[in-house]
Image (cartoon, rainbow, N blue to C red; front, side):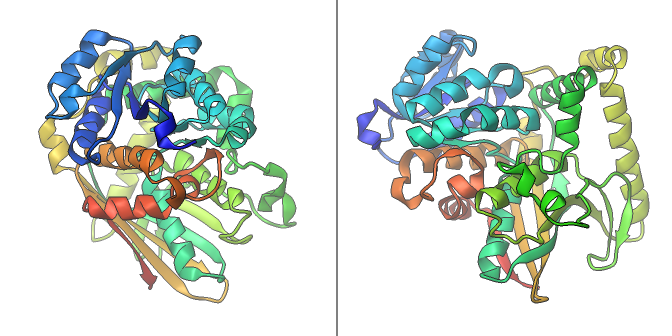
Length: 412
């Protein structure tokens, strides 16, 4: 499929939602001249309102209406475009029909999910379908999980044939807000876990997204201890920091491990990976303990129906998000350190200004979508249910650097 065979290069689905609007603004500012972009969603009136807020020529972009629960409408939408980028979540509740339509139509697809159960479901059901049609189905194209996936890929490129072993992603600076959509996704995931033991088992599996679970090291290597997300606090001498759990680790780590498996474990058969929050300085242990206790308390409250109902009344609703000031003043910095089989120490840095989950995510998501729509033969030659690193890789690194992101890797 070439872009000229379809009516549109890119359809932004969910364009009237909170992140959808931010992404539409980014696309209006950065899409190439002549880009054939359409805005799609359930409400024509809301789409028209978003379009009218954009600068020219984006005010001329067509709008398309399609309900997330209407497979026929989604199939028609997918067949009209080279790529679809969707913000419509929670994806476990609303996302599968659109992925299915894109996989069958040979249409590239990007989303912002951090929902492991959703990614597992689409991989099981649609990987072979998409591989056959030529569709790149790319989950986790925002703060979940672009910095993680691209950062480790940069370390692998630097290492060359020298396999990666113990690798730690440490979030050393993070400022931003959360939207109602994020809380809704968390609420639905925890409710699913509470009612379904199999869902709980999948989420507890560090290799839950592996395309070949029986070949992962805890199965294939006698004596290999299974990897686990950090639950408490610990001091790390190599990092000279106190470490605490990172809320996105349960999703990001599984995406990175899926990348390694999709690449036939090219990172290495001894590759171990974790993600943490890192605190340094005299109050570091107190800060790490406070974050850990707060996170555990929040998850506990979200895990039972009565307290979840109370939080639902207090937390932002879907479609709500942080203020423009919060988005503008946000930032993140991530440091990824790794040892190689030969003993080299490597370090990658991924950083950007802007609220990580919204301002920076709109850039990561928008550039992922533009890469799928326009970068063609520059993209890795593979299809299926993929990850940012395996589906887009270096073209996305290059694009993000032009948007002011820091993505570096060097010997430590």
